[in-house]
Amino acid sequence: MLITKDSPIYVLGIIIAVALFPGFVLVNPNSSKVLLLFGKYVGTIKENGFYWVLPFYTKKSISLRASNFDSERLKVNDKLGNPIMISTILVWRVTDTFMAAFEVDDYKNFVRVQTDAAVRKLASMYPYDNFADEGHTEDITLRSSVNEVSVALEKEVQERLSMAGIEVLEARIGYLAYAQEIANAMLKRQQATAIVAARHKIVEGAVSMVEMAIDQLGKKNIVDLDDERKAAMVSNLMVVLCSDKDASPVVNAGTLNH
Image (cartoon, rainbow, N blue to C red; front, side, top):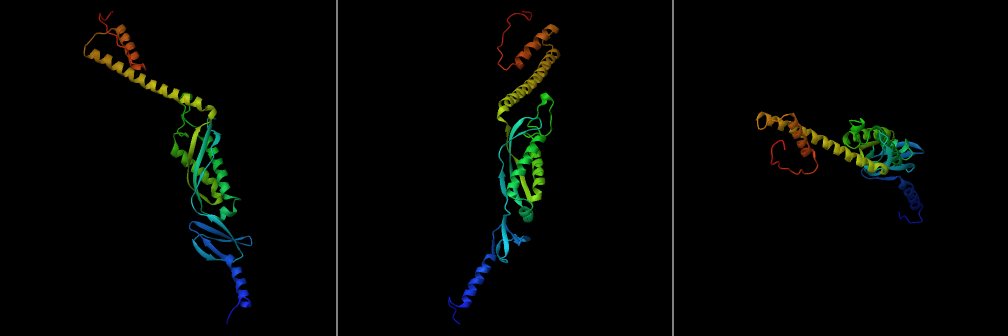
């Protein structure tokens, strides 16, 4: 039987093909299709391949791939109230397609907003750095405790994103610095703290060296020093050892009293 374009069977075949065509679904690797039937959730296709479902199904694509999110630099206050600039790098992926599609309005925007909120909370929990001169000796700081802060940030973000069916693979601070208005002052403070610490070590070492020198001179009977001469010797040695410039030697051509 010859079927022509004017044949009712041909027309019926075209109508059936057009009706069935919307039911074909192509799912790429690490992708998924969420299926709805008249507003009711039916299921999710996660296996990659070519499928056919009822044409009445509404299909929504959700990626299952790992995604990177680099947040904007936020200006927040740390635990001590110092304004700092901070940003985070987040690696995440969708694990529950139903929650990602229906528990939140836009899961990608949800990730961005909740990550910013988590970073703000984290910054308020820890100081930027330790300041021993003011009695602030926190064990965990944003600058030095990278691993501890990353664990705390990952936990905080995961708690916020779990309701959207999202798994946090990694969360860490991408940028950290003092805000511009206090950056110069804090830099000078850090330099001053470093100088004081270095001077402390120098003085501590110089005292040990002077003590050793006097002790060795006394044990070997090289010279007999009274208290006044010991004081003069200590003064001269401390000046030489603690000075930040090279000392100029002076040769005494007379006696010890001149």
